[in-house]
Length: 79
Image (cartoon, rainbow, N blue to C red; front, side, top):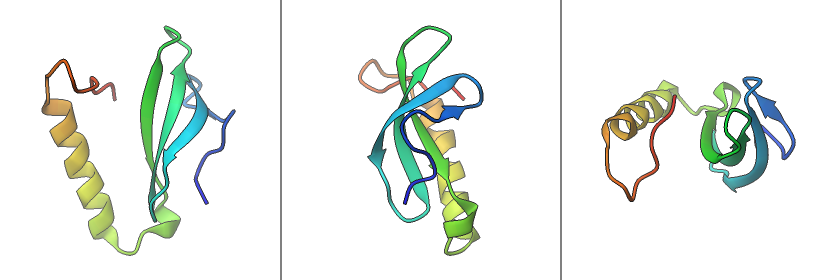
């Protein structure tokens, strides 16, 4: 089961529209950004479903890599 469902508001800025992927502890969603009406991907992690802290470290590492990428075929990292 995911952390969010369609219609949920995240950080008072994004409205979840659909789940893209739901692995064990992290979930990926598509959401509408209220600031500009564009759609974004949101990755959320459930601490309750973590097998161990290594999963959180891997997600943090992935976020740092994505933040450093700059290519027109890769979505821009926001936050």
